Amino acid sequence: MFEALPEAKPDAILALMQIFRADTRPNKLDLGVGVYKDGNGKTPVMQAIKSAESKLIETQETKAYVAPTGSAPFCSAMIDLVFGQDADKSRIRAAQSVGGSGALRVLADLMRKSRPDAAIWVSDPSWPNHIPLLGASGFTLNRYPYYDAATGKADINAILSSLSGAAKGDIVVLHGCCHNPTGADLSADDWEKITDLLLEKELFPFVDIAYQGFGDGLEEDAMGVRLLAKRMPEMVVAASCSKNVGLYRERVGAAILMAQNEAEATRAFGQLTGVIRANYSMPPDHGANATEIVLTDDVLSAQWRDELESMRVRMVGLRQSFSDAMRKRSNSDKFDYIANQKGMFSRLPLTTEHIATLRDDHAIYIVGDGRINVAGLPEGEIDSLADAICTVMAESENA
Ligand SMILES: Cc1ncc(COP(=O)(O)O)c(C=O)c1O
Image 1 (tube, helix red, strand yellow):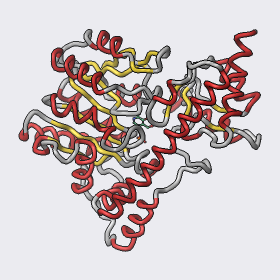
Image 2 (spheres, helix red, strand yellow; image 1 turned 120 degrees about the vertical axis):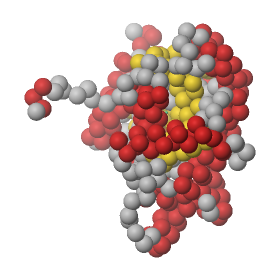
Image 3 (cartoon, helix red, strand yellow; image 1 turned 180 degrees about the vertical axis):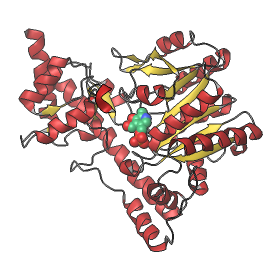
Image 4 (cartoon, protein in one colour; image 1 turned 180 degrees about the horizontal axis):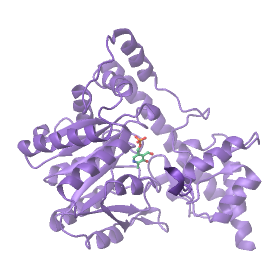
């Protein structure tokens, strides 16, 4: 059976994690990992979730199946979180999903049933797993340029120019906020311009929102989705609770669709249920159940919002400190963009050689494309980190 299978290509981030674990240097620093870390280098379980889990264990009387689309109150709370209280819910439907990844996959499968000849457009760069996840549905994948490394901003002209070559009916994946890996978000004006183009060319928006609450705030980070929802006739959204509820391993998310009208929404939701049934039948319950308890309880919800806000504020502070330290050490403003970017990631202009030297000589681990996890920046040692990075960059310039 397996003799014909070639060696699998290792996942760069997972491979880096393994090398990091095996490194015995006491001062090693992991800036590559894709999870939030607190000041002690831990990825904590949120207190609101701990309380919800206790309540869940006390009150749950059965582990019988819920439904392929999960819990309806959870889904409704997720629609409110992403689309806001004022959205026209009559034509929005949501299914609980296996993390944001599961939502991406089942939504892609659903759209492939409806529009098999469309292409999916993904930003370049993007979260690397977008390619296998969305490609697995069978769609042709195209890329649109996204990032201007010189300014540290999204390159709206390049985005619009590339997407204007998309064919009617094509699907455009947009990061809802906190673009992974660049941290460069679209401004309200950029979102308006993209929406104009989507309407004019009859393209279909597919929003991936995996970091709501990590950028400018829970409501602020949903600005792009809500703007699209006001102006587009239809769209889909893959939402993840891995980061903002800290439930990574529990696999919690929502696959949300907005159709042109109520009847179409109900029909599409029936098909989505079939897609889920054919993939994994039922989503896991525990994490979504705890999230539902948090989102539907005023006290726990307020506590969760506070905890999330502290994480966000911590990352904003780390961005500012690191950007200041890089400015001081490099004697230039070329790293100021780090303070203005959003969420957990930014990219440093590092070559493969820089990254290898940082790892070998300084025990600093960074992924191959220069992406750093801002939450992993070491409070109190930011100056020495900036020093190591600038030293390595200067050495190669002088070589
Ligand atoms: C841009 C983006 N989308 C989706 C996801 C999916 O997250 P999960 O499947 O863990 O919820 C991630 C996770 O890193 C991500 O960065």
